Structures are given as structure tokens and as C-alpha cells.
Length: 174
Image 1 (cartoon, rainbow, N blue to C red):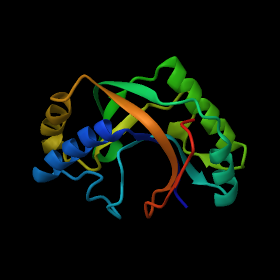
Image 2 (cartoon, rainbow, N blue to C red):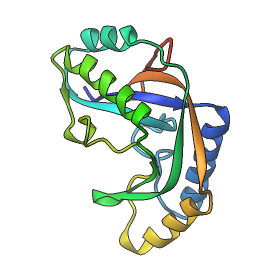
Image 3 (cartoon, rainbow, N blue to C red):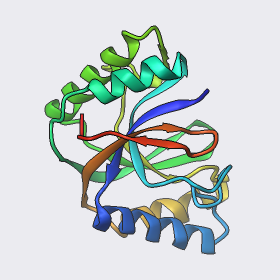
Image 4 (cartoon, helix red, strand yellow):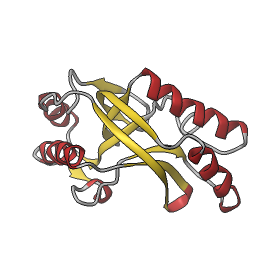
């Protein structure tokens, strides 16, 4: 099991990220378009679970209150270990509080949250590339920077099994 609770982007924001992915792939840089099962969607993860009971986690995710759509301001690029590059979102106090509520609800099921998604350590981001070689880092950062600043509008949410792309949409946006 590799579950993630994700915010999903509206049509315009989704298209912007997919265009970035396409441009990078055309230049030989891997993105979520070609990563693993190929069913990835642009998203911002609130939480990634290392373990847990699917039924209990789904119930907890479905029970989260709808706080409505949320905008995420993207002002830069972040490079994570192993060549992962992402659009760096701002962690507004409202977004951070929403993420913390979601993590606590999931933790309440007995699930283990990945340490990078613990409240206070979480950095909102949307993946741009999944494995950049050092020599390609400059072109990736340039491709992202050419689109900045931008605001991503998150108007949906889902619990996603990341190993195969199975998604369980939520009725609202936690």
C-alpha cells in the first residue's frame, strides 16, 4: 500500500502542469507522464502514508470536512533528493492548517505518515520531474521558471493508491 491524500487541480491548473510535463518529456526529462504506471495526475499531496488499513483510511478521508477550493501560490522551484524537481508552493497559514487537520485524521486510523508530510515539515509542491540528472537541472529549472509566478487552483481531492493510480475522490476539499 502506498496511499496519498491529494488535492487535485482545476482544469486550467491541471493543463498548465501537463504542458510543463510534456515540454520536459520532449526534452528527454522524465515526469509523472512516464513514471511507473503512467496514470498520474497533477496534484499536491497533503499526506503520504507508509502503512495503514485502507478501509479505515478511506473512511477518515471521506469524513474530512469540506473547506472549499484553495489557491496555492507558486513562486519557485524546489529540488528534492534523487533528482526530483517540483513547483514550490507557498505554505499559507490556511493551507498549513488544512494539511495538519488532514494528517491528524489519517493518523487517527493508526496509519503511519511519511516524515516529510508531518505538519511543520510539509512543503507544498507539485511534481515537475521525477529523476533529473545534474546536467539537466538547469533546463528543468528554466522550464519551471518560465511559467512563474502562477497560482494553482485546487478544487478537488482524492485518496490515491500511488502504485497503480487507483483514486477514491472525496466529495469536498479538506
